Length: 144
Image (cartoon, rainbow, N blue to C red; front, side, top):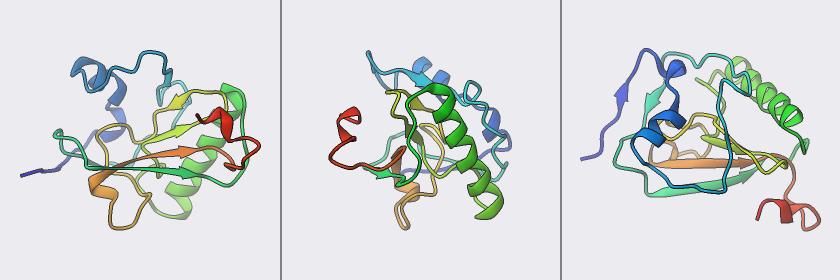
């Protein structure tokens, strides 16, 4: 049966490195930005890892807020979310496993193995992608 494990060093785990080493994905043409490179705060140590067997659901969200078109602007928005999610909402980390910016980059949030805080009742059996900004007809082309 699927299982989760608690870790004391969730914030120091580099899920992109783990994914590459364990061949979780082959995403040629997709550029990832690590937590280190968007200058993420440390995750709270209560964070849980997803099972290594994968998850049955993927959720795509749009954040309905500010948009970004550069790495610096996207990283700034993601850092603001992280502060809000950790300090105001009391969550372990940013809600999403992977925010996606208008710059076309995929940012490591909670990563491949950590449970998110994005879809009530499905957090521990899914991954989430949060598209930064409003997905209107006018600007949704960049997402595709």
